[in-house]
Image (tube, rainbow, N blue to C red; front, side):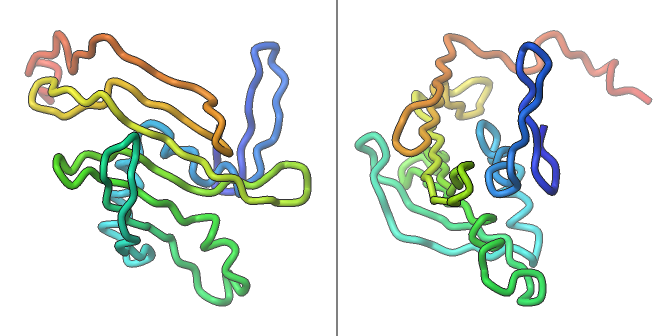
Length: 165
């Protein structure tokens, strides 16, 4: 669970471990970063800028950096803004989001920066929607999890009746 001030991880045995704010702030972007992108496009509190180009899995990408800005009174050192900065890499051929990157911070009290990446690949068209069938997360260069889908359907069995008032 993540909140505005941090979060917790609940283990299978029911115990919980706190997640510091600096690591919880970007958790929503693991598999669905589009909500943050939409918020950045509609809110004057965000700044969006081109940050060059890169290569992801051998494919070219355009880097767009998104920052949630704070006033100097709220963030006199700029550290909170740094925590709320994320980069999105888009394919120039398909415009698909192929990677997100942000910074996590060590939990050992030293607050060392650690690169956090989520890579999207194996794109397929499902009902006219370009969908990544493979998602991989790296923290500090180490793969922490992967998701490989074999099939996907959207809104199976929905009828217009359920949308009637």
